[in-house]
Image (tube, rainbow, N blue to C red; front, side, top):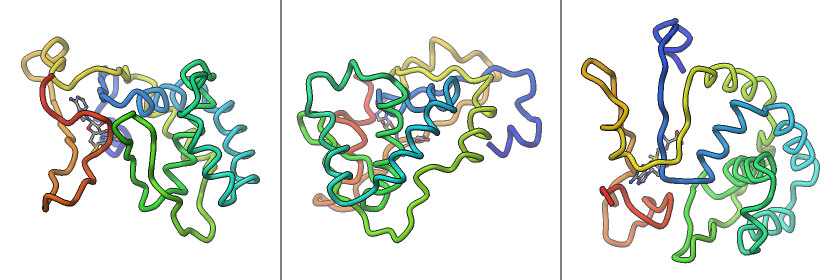
Length: 171
Ligand SMILES: C[S@@+](CC[C@H](N)C(=O)[O-])C[C@H]1O[C@@H](n2cnc3c(N)ncnc32)[C@H](O)[C@@H]1O
């Protein structure tokens, strides 16, 4: 975002990849449909409670989850990110999100101006649900490539690398 602000990416195309489908869907909704997303997040902000958190968290257990509108799934992703324990993204072996609710007095669930700035910043970016190894299909000599892999666990019992069911290895 800072390089974008300083004009360093002016007229340049960028690609953002991630193996987490929900994350990529959210970036694309922020980019292409921020106003609908803001409206849903406003509603979630008003409804926020312990029971509402677990209701939203359980949505991915339903077969209909993948056919929900992109903006609804994106609002769920942002809502959980803003209200869960430590902003973690962790799923179980079935791919169901399982982070407990965090303890925040006033979580910023709907931040309209940040959302609109992010939407503008993403305009020249192509956001794709692909494995990092595919970078070789896109990058040319002289391109800047940045990898932001999951944190390697410091102890065998720490499991905070669980952004999705798989890990950051070439599949
Ligand atoms: C430290 S996080 C980076 C988060 C991301 N940069 C963002 O802005 O939200 C590590 C990311 O690596 C992704 N990841 C794990 N294995 C991957 C793979 N094989 N290919 C692409 N992304 C992968 C995870 O889904 C997770 O989002």
